[in-house]
Amino acid sequence: MYKNTLVVFLSILLFYACNKVEKKPIKKTAIVSDTLSQKDTSTVAHPPAEVYFDPVNTVIKEEFKDSLSAKFSDLSTEDKFIITVPKGNINETTSVFQIFNSVGELIYEKSFKTRYMANGYHLIHIKNDEEMEKYILTEAKEMVDPNSFTDISDKNEIEKDGVLGQSKDDFMNYDAFIECQNDKRPLFSISLAEEDMTYIGYSKKLKKVVDIIGCC
Image: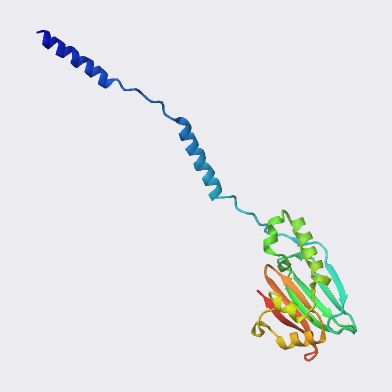
């Protein structure tokens, strides 16, 4: 009987020993850290979208005109370069760029929608229609700027140029380019929209200004 009692007593002790489990605290800091990490990753993966101004309602309040006189078609006289921007909504009006020689003859004219004077990439810096109007007029003024002329007399420098250094087949009028180069007459560049650049030059053979090469 004593043995039976001892066995029962040991069994009870063993039962309680096996069921006494130590509870470990949950590491809440690890969960919080993982959550923050997920939020940070989400922020990096989805940055806020860049906002470009839409000039649908931009209006030029008064006609704008600017000009420049420079030697171009003939190195002994000066031609007059004129840009005219009409009043009105820039999406509906047509601006005109013209070149007149020393005796008043029109030797080149290019018409385009006024809004094309704006480089679309620059609209991220525009906040309202007033800023847009000022930007358009600044671009128009820069169109008739001495920096728009390119001296092509140095053949080595031309070969390094990304546009003028292209192959003969890429030119619109290679003969006129060579003529200007030999006569040491400069080319004039016109830039519109984002990547629309055209170099123009005077051809004595054709007696007018022609498009030399464009990009892109």
